[in-house]
Length: 210
Ligand code: 5GP
Image (cartoon, rainbow, N blue to C red; front, side, top):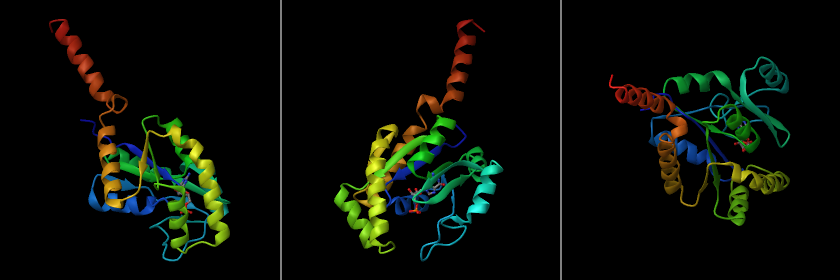
């Protein structure tokens, strides 16, 4: 059994329902920890500092970069977003699977630094459904929605870099798919180096008659 947790990146178009999926995943299973990102974006209605994000100004964000306090960061539609390092490292060491809900540039930075990271991309079943979800949440202006759609059309190009593409049609089913993929991912040889090493040593000794 691999005792330390794994890093799981969940990306997806803005409006794909990642936030709800991740919340349900956390409610249903206790082996996950969610990393709370730092951002220079202004809070939306109902968003709380330290719960949804750590909301900071540009100066504080740049200071955190300079102090090497972020695992990754990216600029998305004019704002900075980044993953605070300390929390993630602590949770992984405690055996939790840490979920990072981040966009594609950050996801690829993480994969480069930590090749064991599992990259999951969530999409609604169609472009039309994405547009409907973005308009029905009533949190952005039409111009902002079109910005998010145009960004999604760029992000499609990055999907092949991910390990799995998960369709978010029925939310409960999607939560189960994500959980099952993460459980299976623990058994991939790349995440079982310790076990492989132990088997190798044991078999080595046995084959020498020790
Ligand atoms: P929103 O403004 O809708 O909350 O988030 C915009 C995008 O930024 C989403 O795709 C979200 O996943 C991504 N994001 C949130 N936190 C981070 C982070 O720490 N790093 C990166 N690279 N992207 C993030």
